Image 1 (cartoon, rainbow, N blue to C red):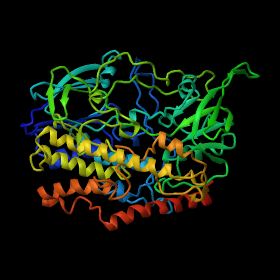
Image 2: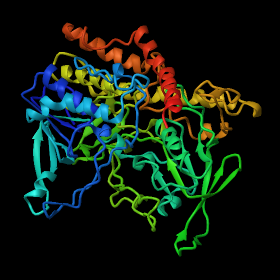
Image 3: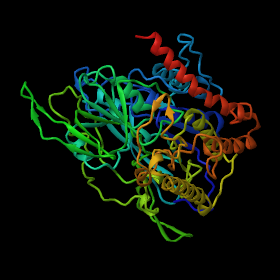
Image 4: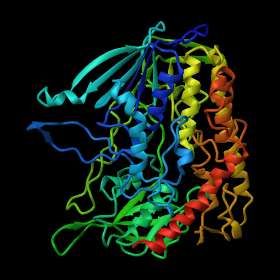
Length: 574
């Protein structure tokens, strides 16, 4: 834990993660900061993060067995974004036009990957990016002596009899740009653990297309981008109807088309395993009864697919523990502990066409009961789950030589990561100031928690005023009597909303506009960082985008444009 009086001016910086956040952070540290050495490590064999959908690993290379783990992207075949190129562009590197599909102006998965790959080319060729390099542990050293990084080099397997090489390095500062999509968010629904254990439920992280789901009865949980896409892909092949369970009306920024083969239902109360039945071919069929909160039972469900999002969880980061005697007294120790509570690794379940069910997706009990930094916070509820004690969602307050980029859920993550990492580059170069006292840095996190709790309370009070005839009203401001993208909305129990707040009122989601809460929403957050940057570097004023009225309008106009593109595709594509 760094001293209050310390001014962080690192010379050597390591970036962890080669996705969009990591790549733009690398560029901004190299081009806009003042450092002697900056490198990026990425555990997979290419950059691109969620936009890089690698093929399944071949068991051996050149006759040598490779026992390398896989880290599949949560992206899936056929994915088309719902963010226009303008909002997928890093500063000084615009997204190229997509003239091949004028009626569908949104970049595809491959086009976005190619944009990121081209952005990374000078850093790949310059030796600033190390692929196949898995970070096993980031450990804070006492007395402000930097960070010890344990790295596993999987590329060494080819020349080392299939065995990777582990090494340790010392860096002055570390930026973590990875880990958000490693930790699926599983609802705390009765019976779900048992269903997962039998291989009858999977998270959208493992979705890889509708093949194998022919004739299956499926229910998709959620109504954001992934769940809507999955339901749409299942509709032509699965047993009709495909059920989509939703707690709230579909937000405007998740446009999708209604489909008669998809039936919207309310939230799930519990899952019940049905007694196994032997099929004609001798195989054992296991199915699930899904009980909705209104008492409706959906029987003989073959698979439950949960598009319930993710939570940031970089448990490989270990920091010096803190002891809090009272609200203003913080002391340090010398043995590092995880910044997040360790959780068991999760591997993909077997494909539904497999004759036997997978058990690997079900979490085992943790083998370690180590205390984490999160245990020093107030009880963490779903809406305040986060990486703790970050200043501006970036700097770790107790030692600002540790930073995170990409921990927030943004509608325009490329732009937010760009301005945030530019701010970081200037802060670590001494060009942008931030509070030097730990207590003042902690105030940002405390205010954010209070703001989220205030918003949840406001939603709870609003829901408590709803009568029996208007129980489907949520904090999204849409009534049950209305339609979302042309669809009649399912009944949603307001009591459930109070017990399980909307996932859009969370610490990590800043809000869709520019004035949500005291900290300003996504636009307000980006503009606050931009103001600091431009105050220090006037030359960046014409480089970084401004969240003004025109830009806000352009962003909101994306969503009806996406809806029009979907309608055109339905009419003209087979």
